[in-house]
Every structure is written in structure tokens, then in C-alpha cells.
Length: 209
Image (cartoon, rainbow, N blue to C red; front, side, top):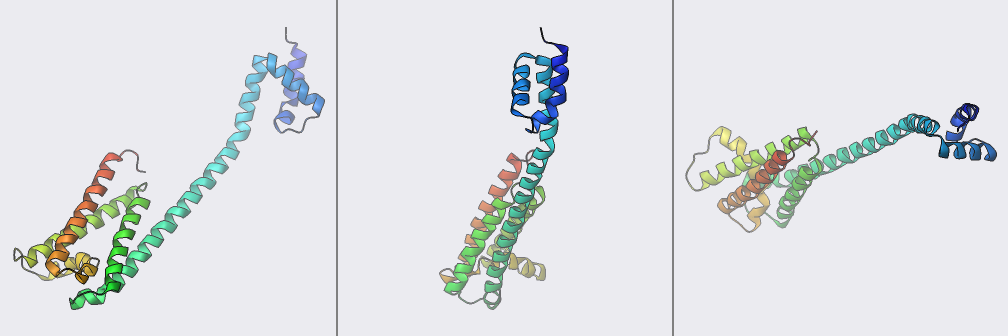
């Protein structure tokens, strides 16, 4: 039978035991008592949990902050590189002539960094929707420009503005394609982006926060 006095002594020593500042003999006494006393063992578990919780919260907060910093850095890097690629292609696309190797690499870079942006932001509801809308806007722009090239549509002022979302990023394809095939290729690439983004949003609509 467990002596009530032993329980009182052990409970007095419990905070010191948890903080690991007990003497060796006191540590042995508490450990032996916990092996045979369910009540004190339960108290020890509760006290340990309450002491460990703030530390776990600090660790979780630090991990969450680190993930947030990585997300922001990834978004900033991808957005910066996409902006550089667009800047490289902007003047050439406006003039409408054949593209050079630099423009081709800029277009390839844009596609890579757009894909990176989409992947990096998949755990964010806002950025995932922005990525989907950008892909959808690029698809509509490419499809419109392709329709104009084959004579199915007429270019208007709104159409000219909208065409920027495909003519500039995909301008590098003019290195080896004419404008019609460039817009056709842009339409296919954009359609793949839209399907992938929509599938991700639909599949993970309950998980994205």
C-alpha cells in the first residue's frame, strides 16, 4: 500500500524533478514512487505537459515563421524573374519582328518561373487563385490573338490590351515560329496551366488555408 506521506513528499519534489534539479537520491526516490503510484504518475504527466506546452508552441511558432519567410522569398524570387523576362520581351513584342535567342530564353524562363510560382503558392488560397487567374487570363489572351491571326476575330482596343498577356511572355517563341504558331503554342501551354491549377484548387479546396 502506498504511504500518503510518500505521495506528499514526491509531489513537493515533482517540480524540481521535472526541471531536473533534484539531487540524485531525490530523483531516485521520485522515479521509484512514480513506478508504483498511478495517481502521482498521472499528476507528473499533467505537470510535464503543461510545462512543455509553451516550449512546443515556441518551436511551432518559429517553424511557422520560417515557412512564411521561405514562402515570401520564393514568391518574390519567382515574381522578380517573371518581371525580368517580361521586360526583356516587351520592346520586341511591341515591334513584332522575329525574336532573338535572349527572347527565347526569357520566354523559357517565364514559363519555368510561372510554374515555380504556382507550386510555391499552392498552400495559400489567395495566391493559388491569383495563379489560376493569371493562367486563365493568359489562355484567353492567347486564344483571342490566335483567333485574330486566323481571321476569326477583329482586333479592337480592348483586344490589343488583352493581347499583351500572351504576346509579351510568349514572344520568345518567335525565334523559330511565326505569330500564328506562337499564339497557338501559347494557347496550348496556357490551357495546360489552367487545367493543372483548376485541378489543384478543386482537389485541395478543403486543405488550402
